[in-house]
Figure 1: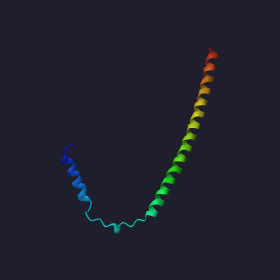
Figure 2: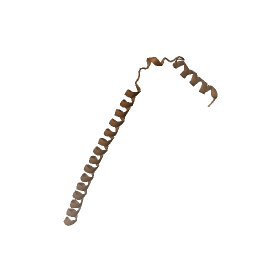
Figure 3: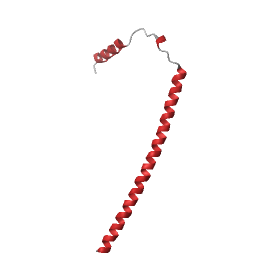
Figure 4: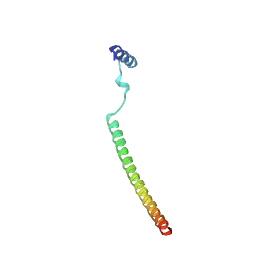
Length: 84
């Protein structure tokens, strides 16, 4: 990469951001931000836990269905052998 490409990207970015930022316009309380973050993280973990439980249930159902199919296949195979 040539240095010219890096400079043009930087100039474009600087043109989007004003030189004098007024931080008084940003009225954000750090305590609210922290609480919101805690809630989001808590919700994420509860959803993750529920998804894992659902996945376990799905796996158990799938395993049971496979076992039933195997038993049916074995019975059919035995019947075929008896007929022959």
